[in-house]
Length: 110
Image (cartoon, rainbow, N blue to C red; front, top):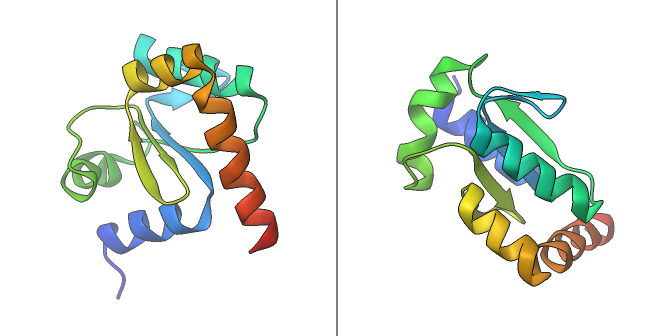
């Protein structure tokens, strides 16, 4: 029987770029999630998402898995990048796009 933690680890492993957020990209339910989505969309690399408001068990469990207390949480290549402030900083410096493109390319080769 799989646990919520197994489900989270599986989601992170399956998607090269994964955002755990409040709401959906078309309608974020908090400003921080909206900011992260905006940065990801500007980078032009497809990303998967999980709406933690629609998945309370994931919302409760993810912080202990990732060691990050707040949402959104961006995972790239199976690693936690961080929340909206870090995503915004990476986007402003240009690093986010190359990080996302490298993860997407790695997925295509894998």
